[in-house]
Image (cartoon, rainbow, N blue to C red; front, side, top):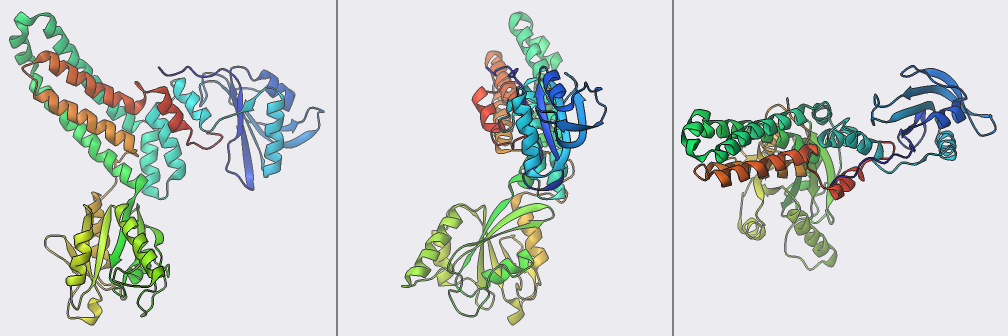
Length: 446
C-alpha cells in the first residue's frame, strides 16, 4: 500500500549547484504562514509575484528578490508552496535555506517535492519520472519526448487501454453471472474483436515507448577488430574530433576509450577497444581483456576489417568468441581499394573509409535501423525499462487471454493481470518500495 504524503514542511534549493544569476529556494507544506512571516514580514497575495527583502531572525536582509505564494491545492505539490527567487550565489541560497529550517521546515529528501505531487494526485508516476528525464535530456528529440510524457500524453494512452480493459472485464464478469446466456451475449459483444482492438492499440503504444526508451538510454556500440584496421579513425569520425590517437604503430590503443555521440538525436555510447590479436605484452593483454568485457556490455558490435582482404582466419577467430550480440562487419579503408561505399543486401556488412568519410552516412543510418529507430521520433514517449517491462507483461497476458476465449474465468483473470501491469506505469497499483527507488534518484528541490 502506498503511504500517504507527509504533512510536515520541507524546503530545498531548487536550482542547480554552483553560481548563477538567479537561485530558487522552494518550501512546501500544509501551513507556511510562519515561514512567510519570518522571511518576508507580511502576508503574500496568492499567485502574485512580489519584490521583497528576505530577512534573518534579527530582521536584517539576507537577500532580495521575488517571493511567490501558491495556496493548496493549486500548486505543484498540491500543498501550499512558497518560493523565493533571489541571487544565485551558493552561500546566499544556503543562508535563505537555513532561515527556512530555523522557522520550522526540514531539508527535503531527493525527489520529495515530486513525490508529494504524485501522492496528492497532481501528477501520475509516469509524469513524475518524465520530470527527471526532461532535466537529463541530452538532445532536442529526447527533451520533446520527455515533455510529451510530462504533459500526460503517455499516461493518456495507458489510461485509454485500462478503460478498454475495464469495459471488457465488465462484459465478461456479467456473463459469468448468467452462464445460460453466455454464448449469445458474447457473440453480440464481439469479445474476440474487442480483444484484438486492445492488442493493436497496445502494440502502437509499445512502439512509441520503445522509441522513447532508445532516446533516453541510447545504444552501446563497441568497435572491435585486429590492430590497425581503423577503429580509432572510425571513432574520431563518429565523434567529429580527435578523441583517440591514430597511429600506424600496432597496439597504440591499450585501453578502452569511451565517447558519446548523437545520430538524429539518438545517443550512441561508443567504445574503441584494443586490437584483438595474440600477444605476450602484459599491458596489451590487459587491454584485450577489457575489450572482451566491453563486448559483453554492448548492444551492437562493429567488427572492423581491412577492405583489401576482408574477413580472414583471424577475424573468424574473433567471431567464434563473440556472445549473442548484434553484429555489423565494417570493411574499412576502401580509399585504398576499388570498392565503393555501400551496404550489403542482407544488412550485415558495410564498406566505408573512416579516413575520408565516405560511407559514414550509410553506417549511421544503418546503426539506427539496427537499434530499431524509425525515421522520425515524432509522437514518442519518454519511457523507462520498467515501462517497457509493464507493456510487455500486458501484451503477454492479452495473448494468453486470446487462448482462453472458451474458458471465461481464465480469460477474465488474464484481462485483470493485463490491467494491473498497465496500471503500474502510472502508479495506480505501485509498491511503496518502488516509489522510494524512483524518487530517490531525483535531485534535491524536485
